[in-house]
Image (cartoon, rainbow, N blue to C red):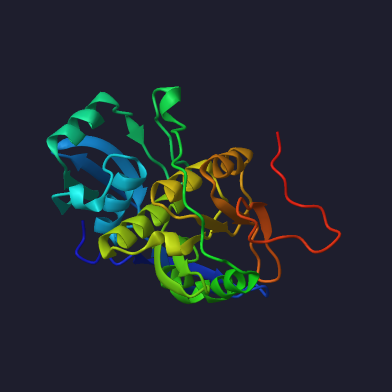
Length: 282
C-alpha cells in the first residue's frame, strides 16, 4: 500500500463540465476503500471493505458487535499490517473464545452495502438481540441538537461526499464522539470500538447514523448497550421488530425539522393530546 494511504482520502483526477459546456481539468478527493482482513489468533475470519483509518476501533467494535468477545478487555492485542492492496489485522483473543469462533465460523465476505454477505447458514444471519436498559430522558431538543451538529463531525464526507458517519451523543444532544467509513456498518463498528476503548458509559446517550436503519445496526447498538438509535433514513420492518425485542428506542427519517419515532418502549416521546399513541404492530 502506498505510504500516502491511510488518511481516508486519495486525490482523483476529474474533468469538470459546466452547464455552458466549458470543461476543465480538476482534482477531487476520493474516499479510500480497501479490503481489511480480520484474523483472530492467526486464523482468517472476515474480509470487509472499509476506509483504512481508526482500524483499531473497527477491530474492537466488530469483535464486540459480532459477539466474538464480551468486552474490550478480552482483546489482548491488535496488530495492523499493510498488505497490498489492503490491511491485515490480527486480533488476539483468549483461546476459548477463538475455539467458539471456529465452531461458528460464518465464512463472511463483507461489502459496503451489505452486512451479512457470504453468511453460509441462515440461523447465523439474525442473532438474538440483547435487551438494553432504559435510555436517558431524551427530549426532541436533544435529537435536533445532535442532528444540527452532525455535519461538524464529518470531515471525510465534507471532502468526498462518499462516507457514512456514526456518532455518540449525550442526553443533551451534544456529540461526544464520531467515526466515518464508506460502510455504514463499519462506521458504527468503529464508534462502538472507540467507545469501548475509552470506557464510555454508552447507556447514558444515544447513537446517530447517517444511513438507513437496517437490522444489523439495531443488533450492533444492542450488543454495545446503546439504548437508543437515531437514523437519518428509514428503518426496515426487521429493524423495528428487533428494536422492540431489545427494548431499544428507535428514531428514524430524522431531519432537521422532524423525526419519526418507530419504537418508544419507555414513553419518552408521548404524542400530543388527541393524537393516537405509538403502539407495537403484530
